[in-house]
Image (cartoon, rainbow, N blue to C red; front, side, top):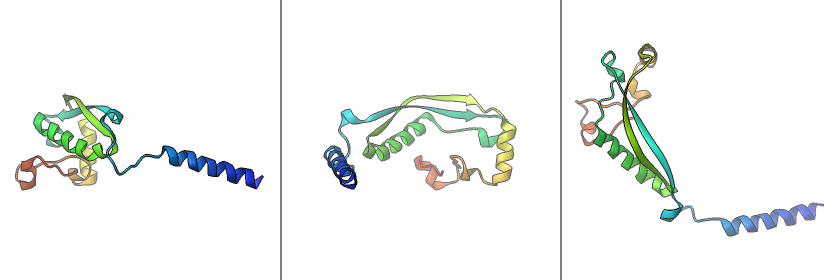
Length: 124
């Protein structure tokens, strides 16, 4: 019985090894997984924290950077659209902001006086 299990495991390893791909190489273009991406940008006149003032070209730059990272794994995020919509349940954002203390710990933030933000980089 032990011999049969050992032979089966050995055969399974051979099959897996024959089908294994080199994960250090970028997959061929036709093997990429394309993920449609819709970005929702919240807007609000009531609470500055929920007013996403990111321009469309900055979103596109961020997606380019994301794709540069994930292309090594054969994944491509295709920017479908950028939707601007009013923030809902603003009171929950206020409660979260008060409990966390700093929005940078849970959201993309950008301040005009932050020199690193001028090139389109964001803190997470």
